[in-house]
Each structure stands twice: as C-alpha cells, then as structure tokens.
Image (cartoon, each protein chain N blue to C red):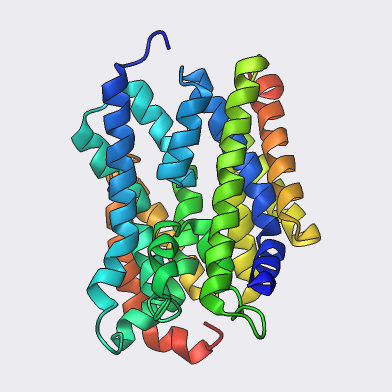
Length: 113
Length: 229
C-alpha cells in the first residue's frame, strides 16, 4: 500500500463514515418511531422527498462539471441523455447503466482528450 | 419464509445489476488508490453506501481529517434521514428485523421497498429484510470483484465513476414514469442547481436540502391536489 496514509488513519476515516451513515439512517426511527402517530407533515415529506432527493442526487453527481472549460460537460451531457433515453425505451437498469458508463468512458478516453 | 425470500430475490434483481456495476466501479477506484480487496470488503460491509463509498475513496486518498470525513458524510448521506422518515410507518413493528432494516437503508433498497406494498401473503418486514440483505450481498460482491479485477488486470478505467451518475439518472427516470405529479422531482433538480450556483460545489448540499424541504412544504397544497404521491 505505497503512497497512502497510515493504516490507522484509513481505518479511522472508514469508521467515522460508517458510524455517521448508520446514525443518519437510525435517527428518524429514534425520534419518531416511539410515538403512536407520526406528524402529518412528516408523513407528507416522506412521500414526496424521494422524488426531490433523486433530482438532487443527479445534480450532485455532476457538481464538478464545468460548462466553461473544455470539454464543457459534453461527455456528461451526451452519456446522460443516452442513459435517460435508453431507459425510457428499454426500462432495463442494467442496459442503461452499463451502456451509459461505457459510452462515457469511451468519450473521455478517446473523443474528448 | 421461503416465499418472502423468493419474492425478495426476484424484486432485487434490477439492483443486482446496478450494484454489481456500481460496486465494481468502486472496487476499481479503491484499488487504484492503493487499497486491497480486504478494504473493499470491509468498506462495503460496514458503510454500505454507494455514493458515499465513491466519495470515501477521495477522502482516503486525500488523507482528510476525521472532522472533514464526518461533515462530508453528513452532507452526502443526510438524505437517508428522509428515507427513514418515510419508512417509520412501514417498518413499525418489525421487531428483530428492524436494526438491520434501518442500517441497510440505501438509495436503491429504499426505492425498491417503496415501490409497491410487497407481495400477497408474505410478512412485509421479512420480505424487506431479505430484500435489503440481497442488495447488501450484491454490493459486497461487486466491490470485491472490482477490487480483484483491478488488482489482476490493468486497463484504463478513466470515467468508470460515471456509473453512479448513470444509476441515479436511471432511478430518476423510473420515478418520473411512476407518477404524473412531477413537481417534487422538478423542485429537487432546480433547487439543487440554484444552490450549486450560489454556494459552490463544496457547500451546496445542505442549503439544497433546506431549500427542497421548504419548497415542498410551501407547495404542499398544489402537490397534494395533484394526487399520485
């Protein structure tokens, strides 16, 4: 493991990430799980948040893409559109993800160099 | 119980593909950063978080402080708070299955458990438990496979991290097709874009989540009027 940080530091980082993640997942149950009924606003958010959060995640994945510097986000745009269209057409997760990823890899390795 | 296991397995198959590919990409990236298969195994076992594991590779490479790791994890994974909120009712009374169900709440597991009530005549909590378990196993398998291949084969893997983007786009499209009410999805995208522009790529997640929460509450009447959600 040359050129990486000391083992204890790696383990510590991983432990922190694991604990924070688990805590975030358990917190709602700890706060709201005991009471008999969940507040209506909480239930409502529970229904609509997933849609909004997925939109947020797509943007999050593209957060470092620059539209003013070469390649201007074109590989992401092209591959992203292909994924969306392919999925609308075939509704097959495997095909959509693999095709899109391979296309993107080809674009950044051979086209937009 | 057999029926729960079988129906969970069938339901989990789309995720099998996604997780093998996504986990594979993570394994490759991790191996490139200088970490062996064992690390891939334990990270996927204990963290079990797709997007976060990708980010973790950069955190490890950067040798960041524990505080930085904690804050970054909070920002990237805070959405799991919301997943938990929507699973409070479905998971009520899950007994011995509950700890693992809570722990294993990933984006994909969440969207699978959310889509539909679960099969007829099957204990929902048992079914959800095995669904989560299968997904976890696929994930571990993908990560270990990626790390193994990365160790044995050298090829130009530039761009493999796009698999995560592809996965989220796929789920987004799936969700879009399941409802006529697109306001929440649009709020999600626009609010995040705005916050990205204002706050920059390193600090926009928390403002985005606050803005999304606010807008969803403000638009409650319009959204509920449209039904479907």
